[in-house]
Image (cartoon, rainbow, N blue to C red):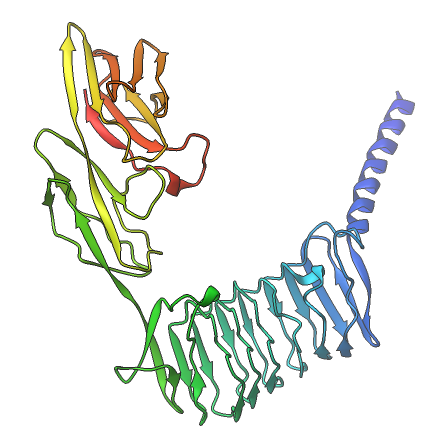
Length: 409
């Protein structure tokens, strides 16, 4: 018995040692400058210590060094004065968070094309190099040091998430196209004596989503000592009623980045199944305008003839002309056993390109192409509500499916 206990104890200790060894192996450390070292904890965080310049981080965390995670957080300790590392290498590509010391004087282009979301630059960094943060698509917030004197060309080029920026009064020199493609920029506080350029277009040379104003007047630049505010553009909305009438207030315009709800509509003898965006290829309907609509849009009211016929304890629901215009889509059918339409439902999918029939739990769904109709036969005791929606079967993108529309049995 003592021998057995001893063997079990040795096995347990061996297991602990193996786990510790594996964790240790995941960590990476080494030199990254003449007097600088780094530690990669294997969990997505890197810490740099020492003094002077950092210029020789590894090329790739996963392949070359066996780290368990891409670097997402970088902590640079006091004593480091410069970091000059090409972010086109894989190691810092997924970097989201950076902590800089007061001792640092130059970051060069180290953080361009990374995934950083925000960054605070210490006062010691007086020059923002050309393209220093170019391609930082996730960057929403940046704080410049109060002693910044120069901002290089394209410093924030393609920072499509950047919302606002303050230019310190000490800035004496600025480059061109600094904020080009800053799609979500809404505020620039220019405390300097320089004229600051604003974005003129989005990626792909598309028009801006916003218009900029200074003192209530449109502008394309930020005058010295002024604050410029952005305002989302509005676009014309046309509602085609297809012989029906509006129920509620008509919408005539849509403001980018807002999600206005479309009114309902009615038509005698028909059921309203939402609005079809004219420019959409997919056979779906919607109830509200997407935030990202950025051009004049036309919505067409979709009505379908729905009839119900009761025979004994069964009801046949007929949906005529079930396709939405000429789009190739499937009709999804949910049959609920109660009017509240709980999550538990018997579901069917009918391909509206060919004749089809589906049976389940005493419910029969048919698509008859020659008569251009769908028949849903249910038992009155087990079916109280039917919901239908359109979409391509197998697609997971929500915008490829319409909203669900109810038909009482």
